[in-house]
Image 1 (tube, rainbow, N blue to C red):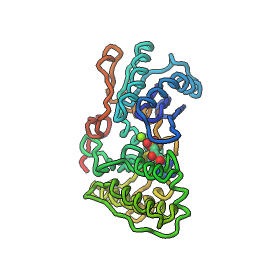
Image 2: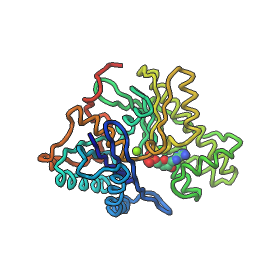
Image 3: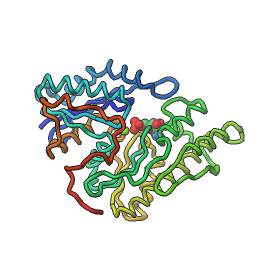
Image 4: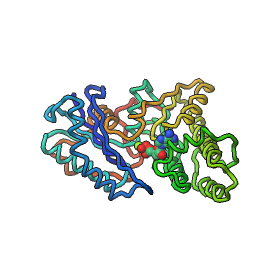
Length: 333
Ligand code: AMP
Ligand code: MG
């Protein structure tokens, strides 16, 4: 069985191909900006321009022709509506042309399911990307959100600070490099609220400290990472304790950060939990995770046949716990 997966929720247009649970290609093209964040209409134009090229490249790498595709899966949400529409229209046209069913996949859930490749089975996922920051785990028929950011995603938070100090986008990798050179810890607000975190006050504080010219950017970057990653590790650890899960899975672009990985690993060692971190191509947005999850969902009978394809729509504000998870064994934690 061959499944195609299309990802277009934000800056990345990705196409992946999966054959019976094995990734046989994963191609993407991402919209980047010189200055400033994502402009949704521009990102959508980018996706429109590259979609054919990415699609055929993915088929070539998988060494298949499009006639061999059995199932098409699509990242239905959450995400930016103009970007999601490019993927959805592409998939609808393809489904009509090839007469194949379409599986609608939740983007956040795909980040979790692709963790199976690393050996994780029933993880608590710390999902840290540009727009999303959530702690998610399966319980009683759904992937439930145990903690999340109350204002902005941790990636956007880091990028906003980076932009403010003039080091461009994406700021994450650059802040990580600066942080390695930081020597002294500067006290910042530590903002955990129950199981949730809040970042906007810390951003304001960092900007004020930067403007005062009393601090080195290396020390500010170091302190940013130590503070905010500790907050993420704290809510993850509390969620592990609460759910009784024995695995922590990292996902999202910020999970590329080696200091965050190190802190999570240490916490897991201390409480005898297993730590999983997929390779980079699956941490960031990608089509392979959509195909991989689509195949699993199709087997559970979740799909739109070509005759019903017009009922399918994007879900820009879909929450992880809106989705009925029929493909996992129902358990209480
Ligand atoms: P995503 O939305 O999952 O594609 O992730 C993009 C976000 O990941 C951006 O906000 C980046 O700044 C951030 N990011 C990428 N690499 C790193 C890194 N090494 N450390 C921290 N953040 C990172
Ligand atoms: Mg993502």
